[in-house]
Image (cartoon, rainbow, N blue to C red; front, side, top):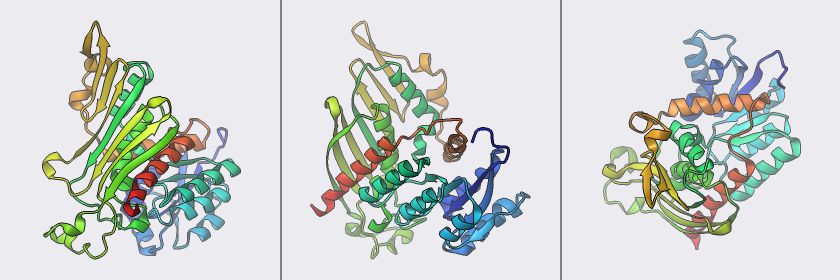
Length: 356
């Protein structure tokens, strides 16, 4: 693919808030890609995305619009399909696209179940296509710095990590609070920091998962108006904690909550090694020297700790451009199949406690 003279033909399935912001807005900015088709079960969403990005933006040619993803994939000879749907339909869209010969970038959570995720991974392997799930926190500047620091021996051998995410509300742009969506606080929000922790630890083989996943939403006596209407439909866990064991004694603690007090609403990852420590939010790099920890943050990453601000648009754009480079054979996917499997297996292992 590296010698092709024509841009990659890309189609997007799912043109709601995420699909539009992540994929529809960014693909046209890449000179090696052409956004030729948009699909949404609500054709009005696809039309709105085309109107906003192409008509108002003065871009040409306007993509073809579809309400049926199979029709789009069958008719458009796509090189890449980007899937921004809810998780309950994501596996079948991804598998259909892979079998049609397209590379697939899929939003997270990967799937509602590990079995469906495994089918996606197996299909990609069988047809020799790239499948990558968008764990886009890996494209943050602070995450890249921490990963390099650990990789280069800054903390010695990683032994333990803590990943946490405390969100002050519930995402309501889609029904992520419904079990069938693959949602819940860990799958929807906490998976980002959990994935970073796994990456920082060196992606060791998974041994076991233990945890608890509870829903306390319905027990709250009063809710803001925009959330009160969800009370009858809400059936996913929002208070999640887990303990993960990997090979060679490496461990991970996971915490993910919705409806956290705004005063503590934030997220982060901490990693301890045999002779050092590293974290994001805040960015901090410590290494053991002469009998004590020495803060080398400024030495390793001058000015970044004080100036870094996580910007969703920046990391999503980087992810999309990276995947286009992967499809062209210029780069290797930042997220491996083994890491995608591990992320999904941990989520499923912790969520299984809901019915335990």
